[in-house]
Image (cartoon, rainbow, N blue to C red; front, side, top):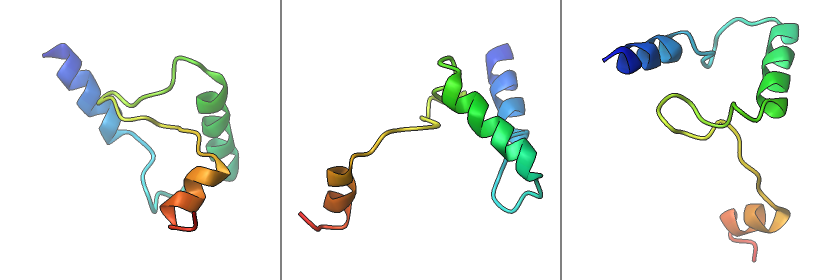
Length: 64
């Protein structure tokens, strides 16, 4: 039950679209996610970052 509560609190406080954030705050957040190996998924297990190759992108747009 405590895990569920902590997950909910984490999601409610997450940065969302149309939030008013300073560029320095967003830059700091991006650097934390990029450099900290422990930050790879949200509390619900969704990836926060993934890698795509040029071929992956071309395939998504049906260019291959």
